[in-house]
Length: 313
Ligand SMILES: Cc1cc2nc3c(=O)[nH]c(=O)nc-3n(C[C@H](O)[C@H](O)[C@H](O)COP(=O)(O)O)c2cc1C
Image 1 (cartoon, rainbow, N blue to C red):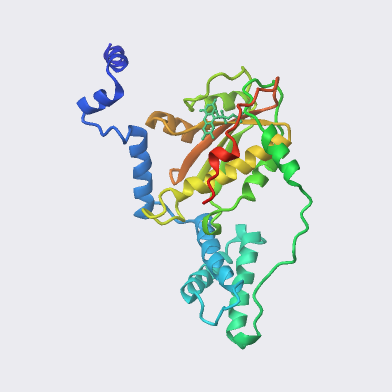
Image 2: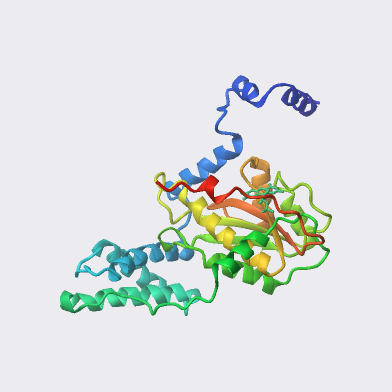
């Protein structure tokens, strides 16, 4: 009865007024309060800093060293604090069995080794790091066609998506740029039809879809390696870049990945989604995706022109 009454009141009274009466801040809905609490918990180091978070920190310190090693004016002692942090982390992480042959750890060790070797050398004789020039085979036309044919299709076939296809989509996500090379993206997913539906039902915008959705992806970001409050918006940028790579790869593989907003999620939806996919609290959920092979292609909305979005002074 109480629930019905509340739902009637909610329909009649505008949200702004309702929140004012209840003494709730209009600009911070309930879902965001739990989000903000999550950032507070990270800032106060409430979550265990296990090896994956340490690896992200190691990538960050080695990224700082690596930038220096690419410079023409590098000198011994450059970014020594980052070196110390990196060295400590390398020593710790080198003991972890699960990180044996980990490509990022191998890279980090090479950076630390290069840094140490250079300390003994005459700075005038040191060459900055550089890679061989890449020969890129793509063309602007091919890339543009790829971008222009990616569409959100909500009418999907009842056809399973294989693990290999999902892995290729994740591979594209892993190749995205990330702030300070932290690489904090993580995709929680299911390729079970029934489970996908349960997951996707947690997203408000999951509307207008056909009956069978073979796969759900949830793009998340590990908040632990960031520094708050300064970097409060950075994790979302990192996740978004990886997400764009993923949806483009999906498109090339013939899979439509329709993104689903997590912006207006409620506390209940948040708990439900985390339970369904075992998403730890220190991961921020950024966006979902309903994936499948198109039953019929959607007509893609027209885009703004370059003149509308580019201003060159
Ligand atoms: C952050 C974000 C959130 C989105 N949320 C939803 C959503 O909740 N439901 C939905 O059907 N589509 C959603 N979309 C898909 C957009 O509606 C779609 O990308 C846009 O209309 C352009 O169409 P296109 O993807 O076919 O090019 C979202 C897209 C983005 C980038």
